[in-house]
Amino acid sequence: MAGACVGFLLHNRYRASVTMGNTGSLAIGGALAAMASCSGMFIPLFIASGILVIEVIAVVIQELSFQAIQGALARSLTDFVFQIFPFRTAESLQGRARSFFQVPPLHHYLELYGMKEPSIVTGAYFISAFLAVLAGYVGLVSA
Image (cartoon, rainbow, N blue to C red):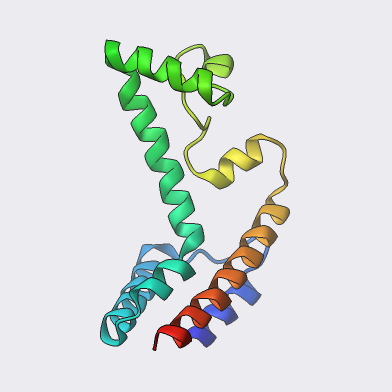
């Protein structure tokens, strides 16, 4: 499975020509979850999937901030949070709603602020490689 994933990544670097889709990604995720379940290595799996966790947290923050804006009490709480954390707001771009990120997935947010897609992908590769090595170390130490 690892060889197939590495081959896919090497063949499909910047300007991807093949999309994996739901079937492939769900099969890989299911296989990883099954291996973690059989070996009891849930912490290393969580560490290795750090990029996914960061992306999911960004989307959750975006959705919660939009839901919190709809209530009057939440509106004042949101204003208080934006005074403490000086994030740019979507209000300055659209005039409608305030949010932590203008676009929910974090990689699109980075593109909005001027980072080029190849540098975002390269950074994600390096972070994923570091997290994979760290997860392997944690797995070896905890075994």
